[in-house]
Amino acid sequence: MKRVGYMLLYVCLIVVAVFQVFPVLWLFLFSLKNNQEIFSKSPFSLPSEFRWENYLKVWDSGIGSYFWNSVWITGVAIVFTVLLASMAAFAITRMQWKGSKLVLGLFMVGLMIPIHSSIIPLFNMFLNVNMIDNPWSIVITYTAYNLPITLMILLGFYYTLPREIEEAAIMDGCSVHRIFFKIIFPMTIPVISTTVIINMIYNWNEFVFVNTFISSDEYKTLTVGIQNFIGQYMTDWGAIGATLIISMLPILLAFLFFSNKVVEGISSSAVKG
Image (cartoon, rainbow, N blue to C red; front, side, top):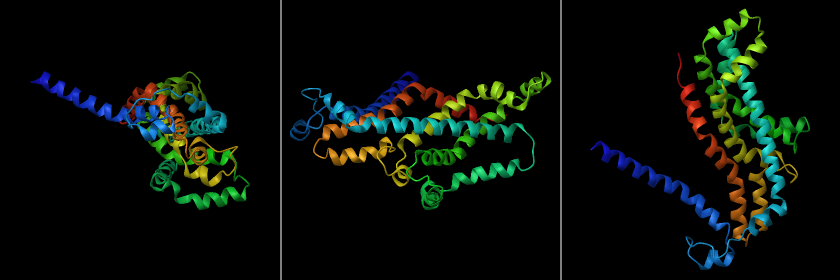
């Protein structure tokens, strides 16, 4: 009976996997068709000819610039967020100072604020400092809004680290900065991998802030730039499918190579003591 139960479980998991993978596979085949195949044949039919030129068409039309903007803005925001959250987690959990609980409470309040409820105040602030249509306004916004959730994930892991490691380092003459960068920070790589993936998903897919603060095509990211291609290729549905596949590819690759790190990091940060 136990073996039958495992077989049923595997069958259910396979069915769920098929339902999860099928839309991505369908979109990929969709991106390799022309309009005639899309509208005259079955939606589930294979392309009569794999039209890779759809990808070259959208890439040569400017999507490469949007893709690069998404890459560097996402990367820089992730570095700032993870580094600042790690420092805050270290200060709150490993150091004793007045106001640590108050600071932690202020960070946690950030989790209760709807992300896009402050668009108008942020717009006014960036307008006053001449940072509208500046990609650094997006980096600052992403960093600020991702700090609370990143800190919350890191806290559980930092609480589990034995204090004997720091005591031994202090006895050897290490400063606080060296303890953090040389000892504590490298030990938190598993949970940092989790926060990197979570930040990447949000930063890469975010639309409203970029659409509000950025107006020139030079600084637009992929999520906003795709809107231009939808209008430009309104009759070329294969090209639209190609832009969607290009926008999905980094997230899919990140999950493919780092999904185990996400589970490991969440599990380790959920245990205290």
